Length: 229
Image (cartoon, rainbow, N blue to C red; front, side, top):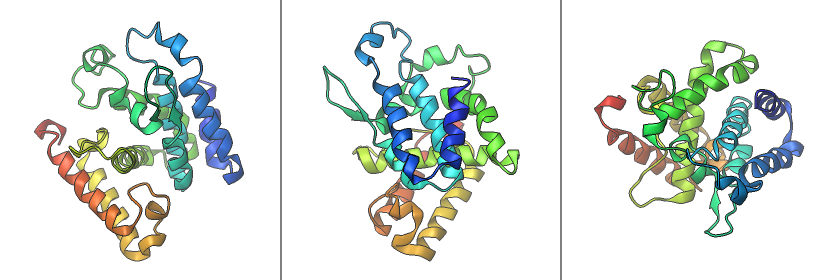
């Protein structure tokens, strides 16, 4: 993956819409290739980790280059199962869906973390993504933007009655989270239905649904517990 991830990130960043099908096909390949056969050896619950890393690498590059429509295409790649109902990438690739927390606490330096695999992937992908940034110091902010869009898209596409969303590092980085949410709200106020967040259908189908999603996310974060904030 040390070669593949930079190729995917740079390809998405510099590519055009004519390349979107290639990135979707790549994620589909990683997510579904010989899945049933590989599952026999997946004792740690990390079967989808390579696909999750690829989604994050491409997703971060897509957010940085303002290709939000591509983001939705990636999130809706099907995870095909022979013996079970098909799911969407957005439901099986967020870090919280990959492995047991007890195992993840064995990762070096992760035993006291709240977003264990999110933080691990944050460090893993930093050298992949920072060459694309004008200011390497904005990487953390970009990472939180992407993870918030993951949470919003899960909320929009899966529609869990409990209001649950995939938590990320944004759960305890309050300053970043509120700044990003305010930027999205301003985009909705200024551009209405033409806001890229709305037109890409990442938060909802219209401005009202997008605003409701922001409200729901703030409520969800409030239920995570004091240690996240």
